Image 1 (cartoon, helix red, strand yellow):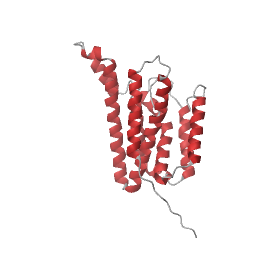
Image 2 (tube, rainbow, N blue to C red):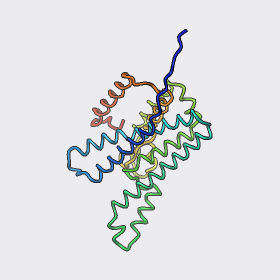
Image 3 (tube, rainbow, N blue to C red):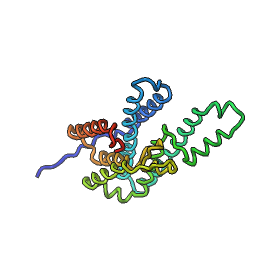
Length: 246
């Protein structure tokens, strides 16, 4: 009977996190500093968006599964809670910074402080979502969901076919979009045509994928790379069709 040797690769979450943060700040810089009329701006922004948004969810799932596998349930729940709180804090910091910089003449050059109070109220009540920081709010919601469903997700981690089915159903959730701008928090769960939200339910499939990769730690596989390339190519081709939401 042959013995199977599993070689576990070194963890890569720190390098991955650094690259994703760099992609995010480059995205912000392109939005704020680059000439919007330039032809290259929108394609570059879309490419960066396709990198850091699913990447953050993937990284969260990767780190979450490592905490679950190497520690106790209580430690894992504590990490999920702290990570969700950190993402919430990041959202409010970036959202306030974006709003204040966009309205700085009114906020700082006049004696009327009503504009600043309105910005604070709209930001902390989530009446208006920040486009630049929306990914952190959705990531916080995803981590809260992972904490609430910790036991079902732990059972799902060892069932590849079930995880694949759940991931496909989550991606299909991109078709469920809120059509009104009265529910900005709901838009962060499902997405909306009228809100600059990142829907956490469809992107939760990347969270599951990150957990699967951490569990298996496979070596480089051409089949997996080609499958990801094919899915990306089809997504780009469908972006200008009625299926762009999916």
